[in-house]
Image (cartoon, rainbow, N blue to C red; front, side, top):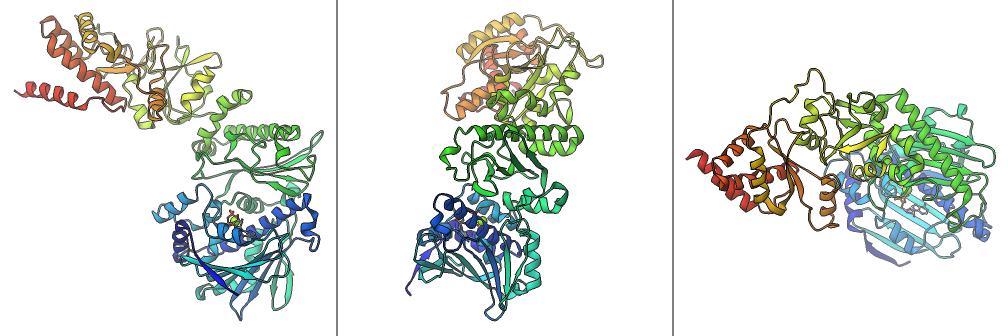
Length: 618
Ligand code: ADP
Ligand code: MG
């Protein structure tokens, strides 16, 4: 038998290096990963056999076995699932295809994640075998083909592949157990691990040692059992299996819809946020089953994109078993199921938000930004989502709902004020907030990219419109502030109108207008967008993504009671117009810096600043 030597993809080699050398306490997860792959392989073949029954005719009962051999020091996981041919072995067991996996390897290498147990979540679970084995042999024959293939590797950069004989379809994964992992040759230990991690697998798992066979799991699909018969631990283990996760489920929903359309849902919301939540390739991952048979992992029709953090499965009684993936598109049964699942999830979130604010806050910080995508994607759920939404605000550290906000609006206040920023800290420091702070008027601080889109799309909540504090006039006079808050009563500096006229002349097209500000109390200047213009942060985002060429000119607001402005107004009256023109540019650049923008002409800025400093100290 001739074996051919091939190299692992670089990422795989790096991953294997970490896996083999990690001093990892819970190495037992390797078995969960291999059994999970065996179960997936059986599911895949069962699905294919719906349209091609010949594929399983000779051996119709699916099964998984784990065989222990102390003499040869091997543990072998076998299945009679779909199997792999040469190309499959090379691509599936030699490269990492899935999005997010490369990030996982990077996080492990950087020491940011120590948790090798997350391995299955990233589509690299197979490699966990090298935690306990110094050599792995895979013997496989693909269903419908006659040639068997053998894959051997010690996990050190290369693997060998060649033809071999194998009776029957399916795969054997033979692990040559490392010296320090001998516990995984003990029947009691292995049987306990299987029960712990794989009890919910719907196929019989048999443990074989010395010719004796023993069934070690219940082999009944968990979601078909009565809720009262399922323990929290069983739900958790099942969640970890379907989601390839290792955290606790934050939420578990197990429900049955009966009536016109019948289906069962077992749906989980994770506790921790996956790394690839915002990766463009990330698909929704609620699995679809039909009458207990697995149909597909990624059925985009089953769940909207804005619920892509939800895990688990739906098992339908009404869809035909031989449904093809094409038939899933625009399928009225699926549309109904989708509506039902979305409703259940939203109701569940509402209940948790009401009953357990702390837990809900943790959920919101992980997945709120995703949920907000639904606000503009699906008007149908807008009202429900607006009630679920939580925000940071100038009112303190607690998360705020829109009902909280509108409930404490000030007398005369008609709008919901908000400010968008890249980070909470940057937003909270914005000079545009000063006047609102001084009056004790709460402002929502929005820091997710999606905020730029849903707020304009929605426009209002409960009859109150959303208004950005960085756009248009501040109309603060009509609002009655806190009795304790200092009311701004000082008149604007004398000669302010002349100063404004001179600043406009000096700045020309660089600003749309120069106005006296109502919103500033401490800072001298700030930028705002004019009423009908695009929000400033949105314009910056679009510019960064090269969707617009340049930022259009904004309004420069000046604080009429600020000492610098008063001094400049005085300078204008005493004929020092040239120096004031330079100061106008400095103030505009200062306002830009406070917005987090880069200056278009930093050299000119430095020169002007140098001149001013020079005069001050001469
Ligand atoms: P994942 O299961 O998340 O895809 P793995 O690293 O566990 O990632 O497995 C990689 C791939 O190898 C699988 O997607 C599958 O195509 C293939 N594979 C692994 N084990 C088996 C098996 N027992 N039978 C058939 N294919 C398998
Ligand atoms: Mg796997």
